[in-house]
Image 1 (tube, rainbow, N blue to C red):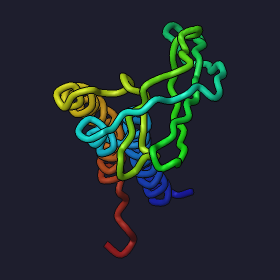
Image 2: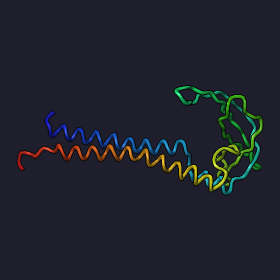
Image 3: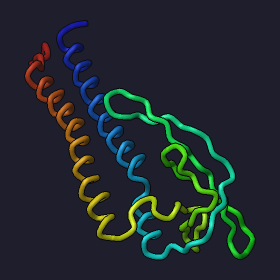
Image 4: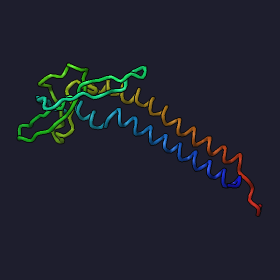
Length: 166
């Protein structure tokens, strides 16, 4: 591989890693924060019903200091007044699942639901936790991708080899 091909290879590699880092940042924030529009809708106009525990199992969670933690995941079934049935789940410390839980759902889209108390309960809490802290994490993760891309472009400009016809 000649010098010119190597500089192009390094540029493409840097761009790919940078884009991958930015996509990873988006995935991370959306995965852990959830859909913000659904959460706001649940805060503003969610209705409450009772859910029955229909299944439970233990799941492993990543803990601090490289420890693996265990918690219980409970699957709750809830029925609407028109007879339709939906399910939602919650993760709680081992031994703290209840047979009945209050479930919040959207009346126009009952599949969007959560156990009452999971997630943000007010718009202020949502703004602080999801927009404020989530935004800081998002920007921090995105900056890694931008830094990798900028470094790749700068390296490419510095190592650019003039072609034979220049």
